[in-house]
Image (tube, rainbow, N blue to C red; front, side, top):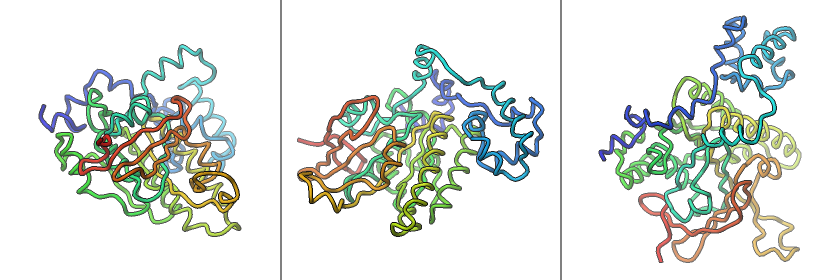
Length: 343
């Protein structure tokens, strides 16, 4: 198979029989057919609401904060959204049918895929936390390439959005990983949209931009944020600003969850660790803990703890997940990205 046939730019790949499964959202422009003013729809878009489902997910209180939105307008918009996309209870079988649309993106290492049930899943947030040199960023780069591959190769037939908060994205790594999978490096880079964020507010604004791109038929299948917490640690210092930091972080994570479910994309975020001052007072083998507290812990669907092993090996542990049990897998970082550990 030619390399060009393996990336999302190829028309034949995009016409895969499962491609239609991803179209699980309705554009917000449909509200105009229900009597909603075009100017009001534009205001909703500017506030980051790109789909009918996003309107349903937003509270009346938050909608009222949008300039020009009156109580009467909001009520009319909410009613129109329910008519276009009914929401409520469904049977377990109906939910099961929707879950069939979920795809899993391979990590590049078979052992790691096995404990994840096939890879990083869409419509959810996967968090990888660990110390430096454990492979968080390398795993993110590997997923950026694999997500573009056909479903038969563990990919998702889609493009990637990468929000870089630490200046860690490297084009040469993408080329090297693409070469491993027989994909043209330039084509792989063309299918990755990168944005550099320098503060937590800009990071939030970029989520509005990426939602607009996804609603505009961008065929995105993966959203990476490396890392989710770095800018919040810079912008909010000390215990005096901790409560405000956690509130802002919670708002960002809520928006990420909406994006993942609206567009059936896999959200992969990396997180840092810190030493627990109270850890030395207990019989805990590893006193380090991930940053973000309970807010980040509850928002992430699957949490992966990455740590160093012997020699060049690394170990990934399923820290928390609703779908797979706790388990560990060994892997290595190679020129071609994440691979199985060598004996």
